[in-house]
Amino acid sequence: SPKRAGADAGDIIPGQRPRTLKTCRRCGLWRNATQPVPGAGARGAAIMLVGEQPGDKEDLAGLPFVGPAGALLDKAMAEAGVTRDEVYLTNAVKHFKWQLRGKRRMHKSPAQGEIQACAYWLEKELAAVQPRVIVALGATALGAVLQDRGHTLAAALGQTLDRGGIPVLASYHPSYALRNPDAQGRQAAYSTIVDALARARRLAA
Ligand code: URA
Image 1 (cartoon, rainbow, N blue to C red):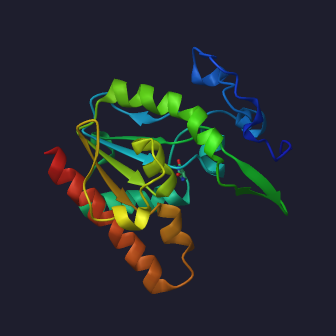
Image 2: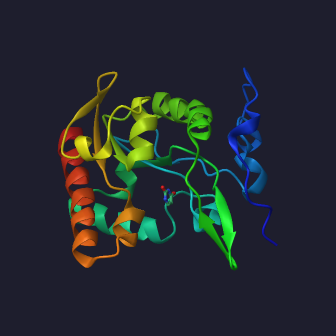
């Protein structure tokens, strides 16, 4: 049965250094999630793709981008000529945050405190993978990667930003390209994702 919804960022334990993501209690999201979803891909992958947080399917599988957003991302990667084995895929937040609507666990946006708490893990992944280029999928990922909320996604699209010498490209989030109510909007968002991936591929070459 679904666990209780509504965890919030109230219980970050200052100075806590969990040894593994599995036992992470840096924020409260673990309580209602099935499991944390770590990044996936090779250390040394040239391109790191950062999403927002796992969705329903990812929470159950323990793997990033295996649901509908992942399918769209796969399609965009194929179109951009990027394969899953040259990327490391992860999320700004590692636990699924949701609220029950009817029988469905609906995605809930992570709070700033949760994103900040989880930056601990994103930083570890960046240090381990050392990608040549980072693609931030959506505003949450962009803020987490740049450790700064001053950049709006709209202003970042098409730009090459910098994170300590690593180029950072931004695109819409794949879920946005799925959810956008009008077909033209969906297509435009999808094209932005393909463009960012194609640019990442060129930068990583
Ligand atoms: N959306 C994300 O941001 N990440 C996933 O892993 C799945 C959906």
